[in-house]
Length: 95
Image (cartoon, rainbow, N blue to C red; front, side, top):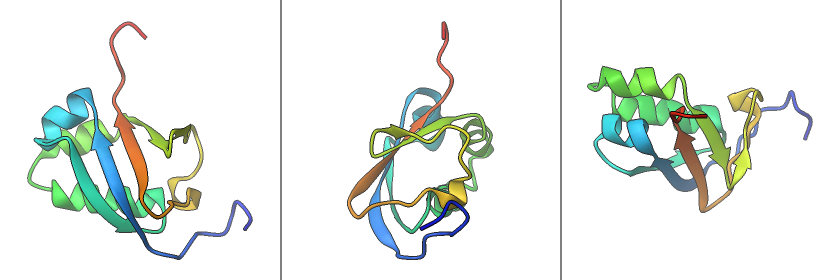
């Protein structure tokens, strides 16, 4: 698969929220059924649409997918694995 190909196989896993993301979500995790990080994050935004602070915090977070940093990669090209974990990491004070 090339970097420009969007994965299409839906898988299930868990999104874990940390620090401010956890506080804004009102819980520590959500399940997902998605093929890509972008799809999983869209589901999280929809699930918390009544919490504008969550959507705002999500926009400034870093992400780990199965313990690997996503960095600047296009979220639509980051494939998720069955039973995988997405860690949502807001900026932390002090670096």
